[in-house]
Image (cartoon, rainbow, N blue to C red; front, side):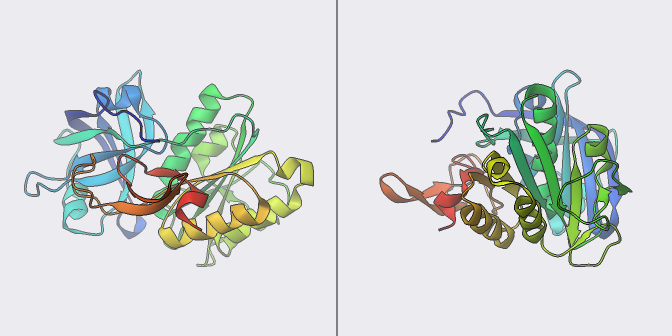
Length: 291
């Protein structure tokens, strides 16, 4: 069901507070955008004007927000003309931000175990969802797995939080989640030390298989990443008969539902329908978009 977005999407000039570079053209950007920050939810995104030279905006998933301090944080990769220009912007400069946009994740409070799977630039919504759970849902215990085929956009460290069912070689984590006492592990095909050597869905399968039948039925899956990964996550959820929400990545023009340039086919009670990823999503029930 589409959420009513009237009076919930804001356009504001946002001062750049931080612009941190990582390997392979990855950046963590923090901006002062209090209108966006006060209502942003995990799974939503902002549409950002990267530079006055380019009018077309770029959708960036929200990674962290502080409603009290008014800032919003994004992870992005400089892969085209727009994001390459964004990567050149400096602290103290101003960029125009439209957001928050889209349908967010909806936590299933009947499932006390949340399995969060983020791949590449799909990692940010998992961080955002983890922080929400930490702050507002004491009864839900998240476990976060992150995959990347380029160096991870953070300084890795070995985790002191055990994750049942995984070998000691799968040891590295996201330090921020470790500080929040949330177990996390990394997966990659690149043979990074401390990371699971394989697909993120194989790591998740090992974890699920290590649970007892009763424990496994307490799990809900939440995921964001490239389409092939999300298809595999949906298949994994079907394999274990678990509820699963996915946040789709799609090219967008207007990002507010006007151009219908980001439509995907979705199964509904009335049959198949074309839904806009920007406002009908980006979060969908996995079984409605991946048969």
